[in-house]
Image (cartoon, rainbow, N blue to C red):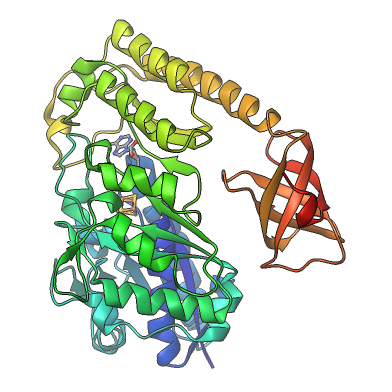
Length: 450
Ligand code: 5AD
Ligand code: SF4
């Protein structure tokens, strides 16, 4: 039996792509293995978003070259594949730096993996074509057993690429122009997942709320409309979507947070920075106050919504005063969680051309302060759950025997003790304690729940 080891870095879309690549290779007779040592095919599904993410690839490839040699000495061949966004951005350069790589394949062409692997047996191959034919139309559907093995939550890419061109970001270059999958194709995939036992779907896109897919009626459908249809798929109890751009939060989508019970009250809506000067330099196309007003409207529609964001500190030209504006925005909004990063110049992006990059020490200090504030809010948000009863979708076995772990509608991890529940159940849980990364609670009968 041929074995493949797939390692995905970066965002959730890469996790999804990794699974789809496993599905493609499954058709070719490959089974997945957790360990590269016994793999005939090792595939790194890479991320280019920040310098550190990109560098990791070469470190990993160095180790894999050694592994390939060792295996060859034992008479076993190994094919090395670099996929994902570094593949797209660097192409043949990857094989120049690491000749042991057999194949470089970008995020838009991985449906051709079987054919490319065959070609690569005769010599190194690079395929980084951008928006070719619709790759989704060529991908095999996952088998129910494979879906089940991945759990009761699943990602579904509905949109890919980005036309926003934030000054810091490589995505428009690595993932290409915006593309939305047709409604019927998305619905068929969701129905298949639900039939196999998936209860919670997260709709993915680099700019997912800009979704404008072709509907069965021949018209263009919005994300809100798509989600209303997905909510009708039997078995689907929870819907989420990520990542969104503030400019694309339209009234219909905000209303869905009020009207669609399956749409979970958690929204990742990156703002990146809090000073208008910085936002303009980043080409974000909105001001800090516009973002504040947008949040107010979303909270009006869904008062209990938990918000999350991404932040970049130390964007070129960001002054101390600008950074304080970011801190003020965080204090105003009080995010339930956030990801934050030091600015990292990316080749080919406009911001990388700006000469005045900030000293590392300044970025370190800002990042530290920002993360401390966000952490305070996150802990407050979690502690506020104690004494409340919330629905938890059980997703996996807990840390200890007899424990099950799941998520609240607000994306918080919860551990419960129970021998009468199973993974996939939705249980009402009385939250008794908030740890630093998990809540702990006791299942209560649904009738008792408020
Ligand atoms: N430097 C630092 N962070 C970045 N991000 C995107 N590009 C860069 C960069 N050049 C962050 C943004 C984005 C998240 C996915 O990664 O915050 O929302
Ligand atoms: Fe990284 Fe962006 Fe590519 Fe996702 S789309 S893997 S975040 S560069």
